[in-house]
Image (cartoon, rainbow, N blue to C red; front, side):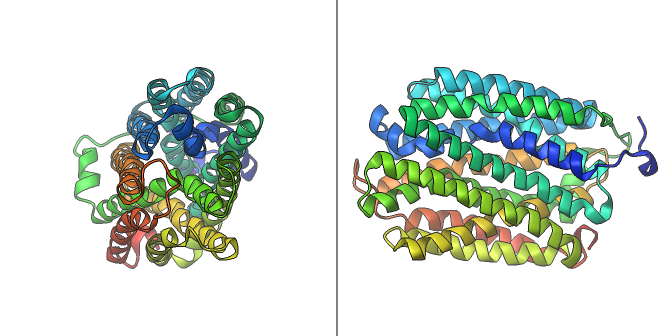
Length: 413
């Protein structure tokens, strides 16, 4: 293994696309529960808080997984960790899809899916940072993050189709089958890439990069706040849209399917944000893009919950813009951190960032659900969503402050 830049194999566009397509299929189980919440509440007799707890169990497992796989990437190589994770994700998604049939089994099995998934995110950030040319890193990271949103969209579409055919059980099974395709594709496209392990200095520790590197601290803090807002929004936006359709007169099942499909569209629109904002940050700089997106996301978090009863012509454009700005800073935050941290320590820093970020993201769905339960009548379709979304907006406000505090030349630009 060598660390010489000249010897690094090119991360070609074809390989980037192939890896991203693999991730789309691997992430097909991510939105399974979020898209099914209205039906699960009715069939399992659970509260919004309990439904949010299932999503939280997955996110806690995912946060732990991100930490472990990212940390291991520094010692065993990012490629190797991505392969292990992809295979584990395929197996656990199948088990969840076929065996989860009540609240307890869903809590346990969905947590296992989360524990398997982390290696197809943070290790691939390390791999993309190693293999992409410096002037194209933002664009490459945009593809990586965009494929996550495309995976969420596929997940929502699969669950919606499954629900239409066989209820929530059909949604679980169909979304649980697709990660197997992703694992096979990832193995194929990773095969030509070297499993690279960077040498580490004896006089430096990973915590020095995390605690003494001012830019890294701000970027990790901003990411943590960003995850609170983003993951809370993604967990509940299908139910929010379903509530809007139900208030307009749709039946619960059809409103749930419509909410899932429309949420999938939001994820696809969010993917365009990842592609375009990563590219824009290569040209305009990391800080201006981060500041603009964080402030816009905060404003929309404060607004959208109050529009649940608004006409679709008003609500849907706001929801699309909300999805765009909430996700757009994800690739910029990742590549800015990769550029701020010394090679050989990026995996460890990403590990702590993921644990903090997805830990906050794990708490957000259950906190959101608790606010819904406190502000709405039990059992009925929720009609008051503003306070819950405003709670998410607090994270956006903190992310905005962190972005503003970055140096003008942060992340090499």
